[in-house]
Amino acid sequence: MLFGVRTRILSWYVALLLLAVIAGLLLQRRVLLERLDEVVEDSLVQEVEELRTLAAGRNPTTAQPFAGDVAAVFDTFLRRNIPHEGEALLTFVDGRPYKSTVAPYQLASDEELVEHWSRLETMDRGEVETPAGPARYIAIPLREDGVTRGVFVVANFLRAERSEINDTLRVGAIVWGSVLLVASALAWMIAGRVLAPVRLLSDTARQLTETDLSRRIPVQGSDEIADLARTFNGMLDRLEKAFAGQRAFLDDAGHELRTPITVIRGHLELLGDNPDERRETIAVVTDELDRMSRIVDDLLLLARSEQPDFLRPKAVDLDLFTAELFAKMKTLGDRAWELEGTGLGVLIVDRQRLTQVMMNLADNAVRHTAAGQRIALGSAISAGEARFWLQDSGPGIPRHEQERIFDRFARGEGASSSAGGAGLGLAIANVIVAAHGGRIEVAAEQGQGSRFTVLIPQRPEGRQ
Image (tube, rainbow, N blue to C red; front, side, top):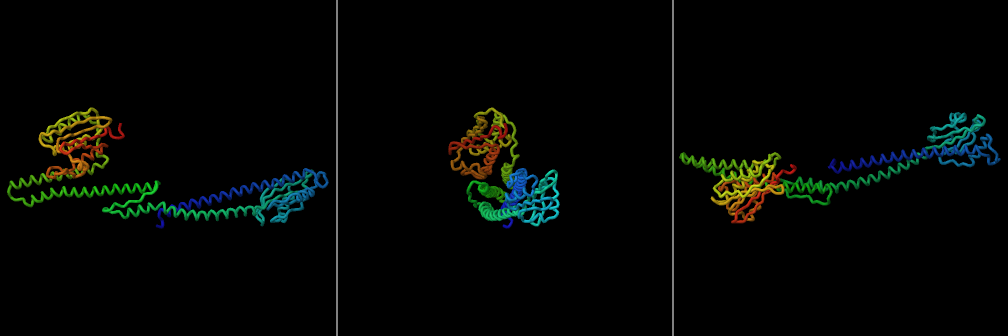
């Protein structure tokens, strides 16, 4: 891909490196030029100071003071001093050029400069442009009795030094450019390896379908890319589970709704003119429609359980709430109802949803017990957790079924839709309790009854 992530990353990488190299070379050039200016200035000042020292001393030939003999001063100085590279020494006696050293350009041939220097009365410094490049100079007059006897000029031609600096920077640019090319090639390969899991992720995503979510990305290392792969694999796990649950749910829902539809259609097709037969058929159809309505309502409730406003928690007194539950449960069937105990305290729960949980459990107990059999209810609070239990004396639940009794449309062995209910009651109870941050525990032995225990935090997480 021409403008993919790999290309963009490398482009930014090269651009930043190139900017850094250019900035570094420019900064290096500026520093070197400033250091060159300092060195040249120090050299010019040193030559001037040495001349002044010599002029204030004695003539080594006569051992006498120079006494204004500027020619002797200049001869001695030029004989003793060898100019540095690019440096030129010029002297003027009585306004005329006297002696000078070899230089890239003879400044004495510039009449304007010569006229200017020959008339100096105070020190002069500056820079002039010449065919050999810029030259920086210092000129000092040697005066005797208020009269200028001679002028000493020291100049430095900067072209050679600046050329060396430019050559150095040119070599540096070539070296850094080569390093940049090699680094860019390595970065391209490394970026390809780093982004390989991303390409694999994209390829995997393109190969996924509703019927095949089994593909996974190999995870290596512990960096951000590996974390992305793990997150993607986790998402696929959840999607696969959700799709599997959805398919099972649709199959079961279709089966559950198909049965009453078949019953209704069969009775309507056989409906005759006999009034008694019509009343009987209408009663059957109405009952089946009611059952379909309950299934739809239960399915809608399960769908809404994922929404944030599913619960509307309020403060509930546990003892009063337990007594209300017990009174409502006794209307479900002729059983030996017993209230084993009530806890004392205040809960923050959705009163209606929690009532629905306990009534579903009670309805399940009634369905699996006979008239006169014992069903006990109780509640308690300990360690910030409320506990409700419902104990029946029914046939119990086989161990191999206890894992799936909270699944949608799940029924125990021997149960059928004709026995009432669509197998959604326990599933609804489970999602409501889970929405409260709690859980339902089952303790049952075949032939010895079942005990369902609902455990819910006394206060929702985050509330004090």
